[in-house]
Amino acid sequence: MTAVLTGIGGFLPPKAVTNDDLSRTLDTSDEWIRTRTGIRARRMVSDGLSTGSLAVEAGARAMRSAGVTGVDAVVVATTSPERLCPAVAPEVASRLGLGTVAAFDLTSACSGFLYGLATAAGLIDSGTADTVLFIGSEAFTTLVNQEDRATAPIFGDGAGAVVLRRGEPDEPGALGPFDLGSDGALADLLAIPAGGSRQRSADAGLGHGTVPTADWYLRMEGRPLYTQAVERMTQSALAVLKRADWPVADVDWFAGHQANLRIVRAVAEELELCEERVAVNIDRVGNTLAASVPLLLNDYAARGALRAGQRVLLSAFGAGLSWGSTVLVWPEIQAEPIN
Ligand code: UT7
Image 1: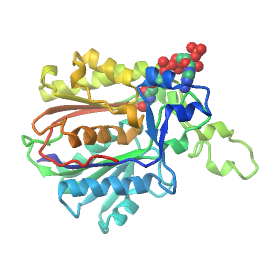
Image 2: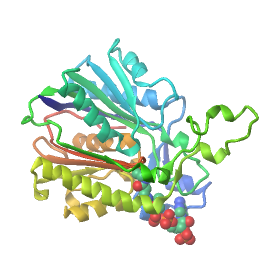
Image 3: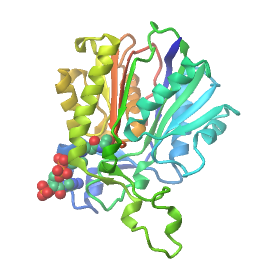
Image 4: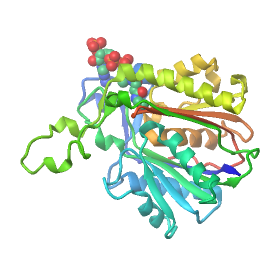
């Protein structure tokens, strides 16, 4: 038995922010952002939207795509939690009318979708659940200092979701094998120092003054991360292709985490995959962490570019450091275009 993809959905908050919009308040330019990252615009939460509400919208669409009204478990991957406690997945399950099903969050930053797929597939493989709604949802721009030109242009908000069901390993949509990895020695390359148990949130506002404001926001060392991203995604993709016994030439679509267009292209070049087989939507959404890969798949499926029977390689890399890859043959499923 294995986990089979049976539905997909996505949601983007309506507020679009272009590079020109950012250039009005930041010392940056459309030209710099476009040529260094491939990003032209991103969406940002506003008007009461947050990680939970994005997840509910994407989850509802994925369930509609799968033609189901109930599931056995809900998993949400997010690194911009609704609150530090509790997890948002139970609330998402409740708001979707799913009753008292198993529900929990997992945190693995930009590789959250790959780690989450493996976890959701594990619930199915172990017989714990027959169907799982798995959502990557992020309102990460709320954790980025909008006055920092090194990070503000990069990230965007959104949610992508899939429904997985129990099935056979040789069916279209069957997930796996997986390759997952991490390197915690490099954790500080991408981190939000405060707000957890190390630099406690209670220190702020109580007059202790121990937590500098900058520590509440994301810190990123772009250049070393760039190198790691290319190396780790390439190695992971090659490892999973070997495990799956797929030659690179058999891959119809490389759906890599949209961190930077140059990173995705560099990985494709290392893999010797031609540009026509590289899926890209970073131009309009930016880096949406755990929502990145499902939003990309939804975009391509909704416009008919990703079709049933095509072989897809998924790969992601992010904070932790952490990375992961898997493969699947795209199944016959409906995907709605995202606003
Ligand atoms: O999601 C997974 C984890 N994240 C990543 O994988 C991110 C990986 N890193 C990257 O994508 C790239 O390193 C960035 C897009 C973040 C930065 O691009 P870069 O080509 O590595 O630029 P840089 O940081 O080396 O900066 C080059 C120059 C610097 O000026 P000097 O020192 O050469 O004079 C920066 O100060 O560009 C400057 N710069 C900017 N200029 C205009 C940095 N940010 C900006 C900006 N606008 N927004």
